[in-house]
Amino acid sequence: MVDPGTSGTVGPDSDLCAPFLEQLPVAGVAVTMFGGSSAETLVSASDELAARLDELQFDLGEGPRWEALRTRLPVLIPDVHSHPYSWPVFNKALLDTKVAAIFVFPLTLGALDLGAVELHHTKPGSLSYKDHVVAASLAGRTAWHLLRWILSAKSPDTDPAENSVLMSRREIHQATGMVLAQAGTNAAEALLLLRAYAFANGMPVREAAEAVLRGDISFDPKNEGRGNAALQ
Image 1 (cartoon, rainbow, N blue to C red):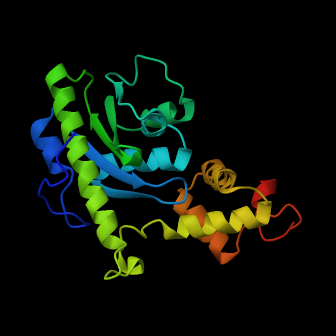
Image 2: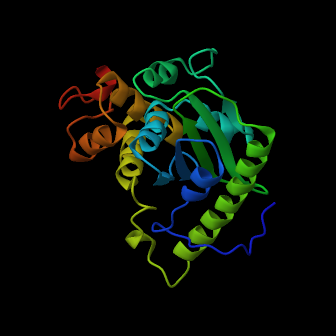
Image 3: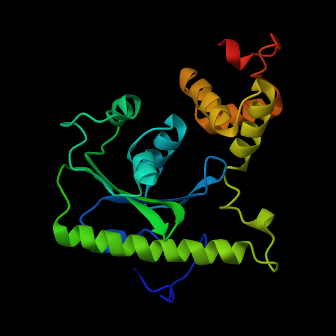
């Protein structure tokens, strides 16, 4: 386990991806922090492809990131095109990208699940044993960074509403609450409904959330007007 006293900048301005790019044979990195379905956000991404890979998994609700978070174990995919995995929609979406290999490491500290580091390469290939050890060590350091950041952001001297990264998906969380009330379901199922609507209509989940907040669509089965999402 990495020493919790390890120095380093914590916050939206820190480059959490750089150590992975410098020490591992990967092309891109994304760091995601989450605390359940109602508190998930992309903290850092090395490039547009890394950010897109993270957004695809968030929008679709499936992919290696979720598997790593569920099992609390690394998910290593050396060739995304040669082996069948249990994420059919995500696998199909990968065909439109240059991603060839994905390596996801969960960010855990004891019983705390803080998020995940998503590594990818544009050519197939496995991580060596040494690379795996390095990636796990860097993931541990990143987990400590995020924990210090979370504790700092929630301290009495800090207004969480002013932390733009922690609130970057606030609209999605607010919309999930509205869907929950409209459909009479729980939070996990409400987010699933929002994702399904976004996927069926070819839009990012953020756009669907904005439409819910504007009142353009409704998941109330009794509301047959204003683009009832439950009926589409």
